[in-house]
Image 1 (cartoon, helix red, strand yellow):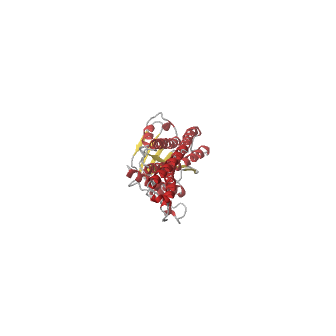
Image 2 (tube, helix red, strand yellow):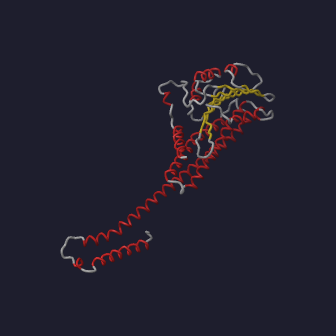
Image 3 (tube, one colour):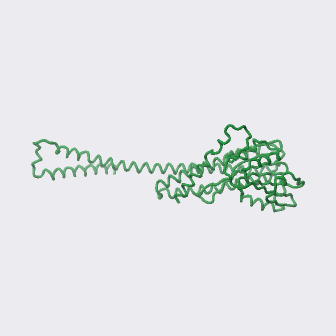
Length: 367
């Protein structure tokens, strides 16, 4: 169990860092360099064609089939899995008429969540968060969405199981996705990712609750490790969620012809969810900080009690040392030295001093 915690700490630390950004040092803006972990062997392209009457799914198709062919009367959702092939991503960008600065953001898996508006597209990038259970590693993938007329393109680092629910929803002929343009699907992707945040945040809450219960039962070093890990997890989730609030707010305010005004209410609902998460995250950070303060205060109290005990012992020995010091002096004429009861009397005096001091300490509640 301890080994897994150590591994988790190292993994979270790498997420919070900015490893890989130095690869772009000295390069001009718009240089296409993949920054991040290679999570797939090769890039795959899937596509779903749909309208109010028909839905058709195509797996592992070519780039030409996805973007060069004409699909009149259909909305398209193109899923591009894998970001490490910069040449292919560049080709996709050219075919979609996307600026290299935008492609640069897609390839940078540490990109801060944001939204950008072009003449014929809306670009949105953010992160998914996954956690199997409280106390396990938080995993993440970057997702970038490009919304164009009758087309939604999603770029992600690896295959995402959370899209399975959307694939099923598209199959319902009376569902909102089928009855709307891709702007509703654009919303649905954002919504399902944001909903996933709730699960991770709930797990973090469970971890904090468990830590509160075990605060005085676990060894000190384990408690400190858990407090620190919770702090890092909350910070990572904060960095992933907080910018989404700004991006969705900008998305609602910007007027464009790609997003139907009637669908703005759905984005507003997602915005409310993100605001709720922001408040929960801040609350959990305060709770974790409170647990840390309690832990440090407990440690300080323990140390104070130890120092108090040592001080009392030292104080008791001060008069005793004084007494034995007198009779340890090397003078020939000390009256009590040759007295028959001198030795037991000294012991009685020292015992009386000890008892008197203990009584005084007890009365003043120092013991």
